[in-house]
Length: 334
Image (tube, rainbow, N blue to C red; front, side, top):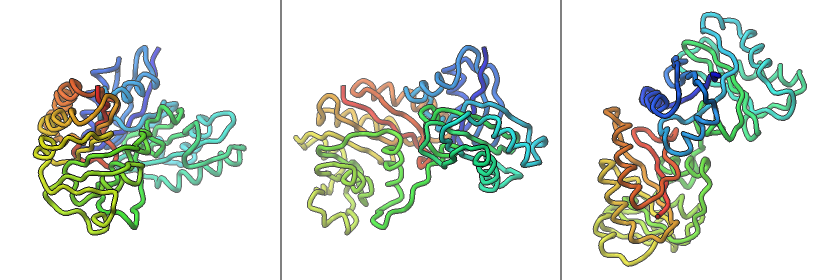
């Protein structure tokens, strides 16, 4: 029995998402939908298996999934009425629906206009329509090459945003845009942070601020640079003007969470975290961004996670919407 699944990834890393899907699952066919979305056909597996592979860390470049119900080549979808009918036929019989419409590549249709028309039809049919926050997602991808309509459980979609494109508003207290990476992670993977945290390569302090906001008792920021003035005044921040390696060698403190967003080779980042493992107890957390390029990134991440796995159990590995040339990894101390 075959099943079709729509997936989304960053456009620059789309081909590596396909590589990982073919490596991990029984993919018998693949077609591109647009620049950052594609359809795979599975033999003997379905959406649940793809979602499980993504949650396990096997699929690092897939960030959104939908069980495809219908598709049309772009040339046959010029009339929005056809898309509206496809969407209405894929809607569940009852219950609230999160209707999500987005474009992949150049589309002849404006996503918001199509969404409004579909929402009107669904409302007229008696449905309660929302943008997010429902158990079921009705998804419409307006691809450059084809239009795909599908329905899925939000839990299997990986992200409750159209195409996995998580949009976060800037805060008036924001120190750097890098904060969005940590905020997006916490929206996808609820983590309890209550003890002391260590922020390696912390300047100007955006991640330190987010850690404090999400419950850290105290943050120790490590960086030869300075913290932002608004952060420097906080009594629950200790700033250490030194390098990550020097701090790790000298400190005798322990930390419930250690984060690392430093720009360095992924294996060097992993070596730093393995060195820092002595500062944690079993079950304590690490969050690290592995910097990559489009030259063999799958193999680079494989090697990095294999080495990191000696000290940490990997519980999350994915290229988030706010990650550019990097993958976010979460682990627990063994």
